[in-house]
Amino acid sequence: MTLSRTFGPLHQQRVSKGAIALFNNLGIYHFCIAFVVIDFLDVLDLLDTIGLNYVIKYGYTAVVLGFMAVYLLRWRTVDATTAPIIFLVFFVVTGVSFAVRFFIYDERLSYISAFLSPLVFSLAIFIPPNTVMIDVRRIVRVLTFLFSVGSVFYLIEAIIKPFNIVRSLTPLGEVQIHKSLICVLALCLCILSGRKTLGLFVAVVTAIALSLRPVSTLVLALACCLPIAIALRSRVSGPRPVSVLTARVLAFATLLVAISIPLLLYWFFDDVGSIISSSESYLKSDVIGGQSNMEFRLTILKYAYTMIDKTSFLYGSALSGNQTVPLAMLPGWGWWGAVKGISDASIHSDFVVVLVLMGILGYTVFSIAFYLVLKDRFRELGRRDLLGDGVVLQAISIIGVVALIVYCSDQPYLSYYNHAHSVWMLLLISEVARKSKIIGKAQGVGQMIVPAVPRLAGLRR
Picture 1 (cartoon, rainbow, N blue to C red):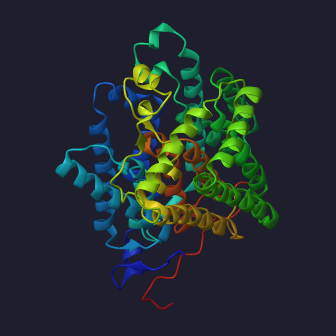
Picture 2 (cartoon, rainbow, N blue to C red):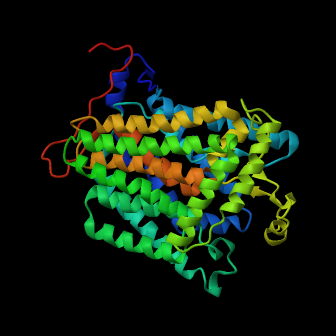
């Protein structure tokens, strides 16, 4: 399902050699790192309180699209890889829907926000094979430090929540559980890179944050991702087919469950909903000492499924509907409007949102895109000459996708593009590494890691 064809000038190989660059020095890499830091500092949330959220979204989109245009003009070719193209198509389709609704009906509500940060991943299309080198050791070092600091910021946010000093600031008044995904990335990256002391520190930070703000989604993500990180740790030093196979089974099993649950809920809501409610209540209340809100979420999902019955199971509402439900209008939920000041509540699952807005057709393509992302990275781990930090980079990308799938199953996570940005940044870096020369020595291996360059269309060796 992955297209290796590269479209561009006939003398592509000569052009690529003349245009060689270090990915670590490209503007998109520095932009991605800077945006993660800005998100850690809650700058975007503070700007949101003064009504600049749309400006930030448009600016973010414009910057990424600008980099796409620059790299297209620089290398004058594109690399047609399926997964990035699918997410780019989702952006275009939801963008057209947003434009129609905005300019014709003056409505700003749209699902395009969910596909803003995937643009970062889709940008890899415009960086062809053999055009850049990538220093994976330096990138892994930066990411380890960055995610570890992010977990500390998440803990700080959980600590200062009860104090009056932040109650006037709406974003800081309640710890945003969507940012907890960074703890999963930090802990797994420490395991993969063998940083035991730092890993212990991040584990303590995560445990304290969980005690202050019990988040069942974080616990589920850790349960799915930590075994993958442990399995792939041994792959760093050399080929380990059994370890890779174990991680592959765990990752694809997570994806299969995430895809299946919304469909099972649609057909057998009462039975499946009862199982989910009892399981989540046990995890949230008995295990981590929180308070379950599964009744709230199931009420939203049940109403969301009635929206499918009113439109089409095949193509949903064709992006003409909303990713919210009028919760305050439902019997017994009138208090929601009085407390929140709004009657609508977000559908707590990106998979369900896609099913409602795009039907089973869009849902299938959406699921296939995640499958292809995982498949490409596991294929890379199958290469015997990939060692050290090159393995770490691909492995943390796999873990990022698995964590993202978990969060998307339980939250409208993709719409929080600033929080999801970290995972799509990992996918961009790993995608570029798959088709570029990896410079630097592998950990514990006295040789240079140089992957095979894909054969270019229209050229003979």
